[in-house]
View 1: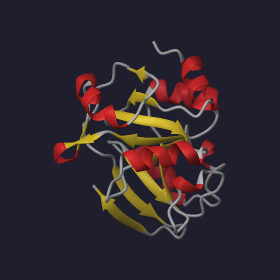
View 2: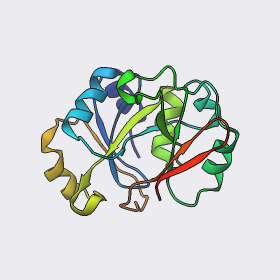
View 3: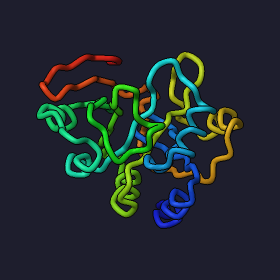
View 4: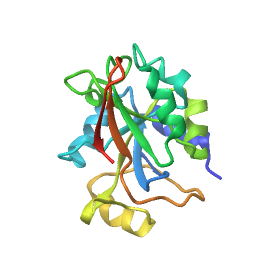
Length: 184
């Protein structure tokens, strides 16, 4: 069992925490902290969008997206695998997490440890998966050790989920219901 209060203390202090999620090992920080997000993006650059912003549920999402497309809730609920929806009209998130077109990719997960952190912390979590060769997400702690030399992380949170090792699906979703699949 994780010490959620310790993780929250670290996040509030601007630190980065390594967590096991439904896709694999991800580095998380406060999604409202520009400085920490910029540090993660600098040390883990990617040509394609790989980061996500974890929110607890659609109600939590309303704080960060001005107008949520009607289809968003259905896509989150019906998806059988991890999915990120890149939504327009983002607000109250660090500028470093928002694209030039004012979009950001949001994820809702069923991972208990992430949801426990989100419930108590009440801020969204910016997450970057640790990618290694062949665009796989690291799923084992020993792989994490070799990849994480670039950055000094502050904690490791494990849980009993079986990660997929694959980046989540990514879709652009517009307010008018238009969908563009970026990554299946």
